[in-house]
Length: 292
Ligand SMILES: [Zn+2]
Figure 1 (cartoon, rainbow, N blue to C red):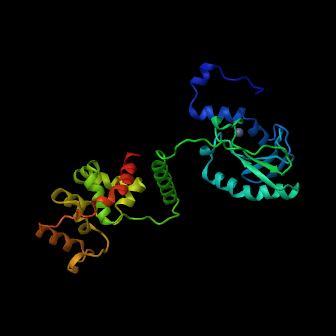
Figure 2: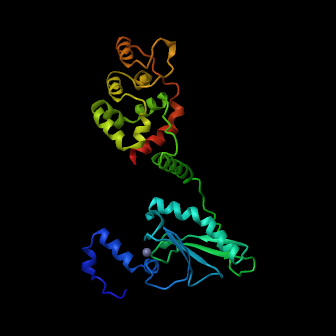
């Protein structure tokens, strides 16, 4: 802040990187981390520091912050985030034992409307005692109905976590059953057309879209494309690239070539319509996947 600040015009011409750099330069906490501003540092490791809050709520009020500048939680790099949050439990206990105090309030204001006042993401560790005189961080109870938001929230949180964990390789990919996939294709004309008219595009998209990859895991897209051109997607078990149980036990889906020729010869397949009702929730999920 000692140096001259850019003019309004200069600000407007700055790239997002330059703006981020300027924000970092003006961030008092980054200056504390660099040692340019004095502080009472009570903890430091490779990734984060803990300092005494200069406006403490109680004695021993510590703030923990990543060394790398991030204004809000979503902008913290994943490895920094993991480090920071895996340490909070121990640092809070360290504070509690050192004072000592009975418990602590761990407080994060994530963004301006949430009460964040600093330009740098912080976690407050506020030591608490029954007689500390602080009112508890009260979350007001209001009579707001949550019925309308419940299904959307439930679906989005599940979907978010599944795709996050899959990206991280933490959970095995769950392949939809052939019936489920058939239902998805029956209901999603756009996807169906893409498979019929441009199977190569679908294959390319599978490389970069983990959700498509999951949906078509074990499916031969070229065979599926041919199948959809001529028939009903309920015949999907015939395009599996993996062993799968078949009715009558005569066909071996492992042998794709044999399967294909068999398929050409028998035209009157019985469509599987019986499970239509059950697939609506799955369909909703997949429709969301593709509208993302
Ligand atoms: Zn900063």
